[in-house]
Image (tube, rainbow, N blue to C red; front, side, top):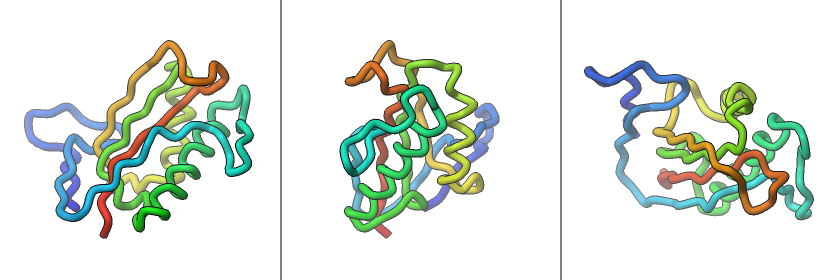
Length: 128
């Protein structure tokens, strides 16, 4: 994979690459929400706990497909409250290498499938 963090003519980034080029088999991970392996919601009013659970779910889905977070080329993040952005970025830094961040999109949405969910993340990754 090749991360294009700061190509000429584009603005500076904050935790993402403008583009990521790669070769190999692509894995598409459905949007993950803050539900643990027993089906319980995590972090009812805690955006960091919800975000951490979502990244743990992403890790599990990627492992099942034969890859990991280091091989994610694109994240799409859905937040119901942009006030959670600082918390999201803090937790993302626990899981994503800041020197090799994926391309990313972040969208504020009016709601997710469960009104208590504050975040959902989907991913595209490559199998090494």
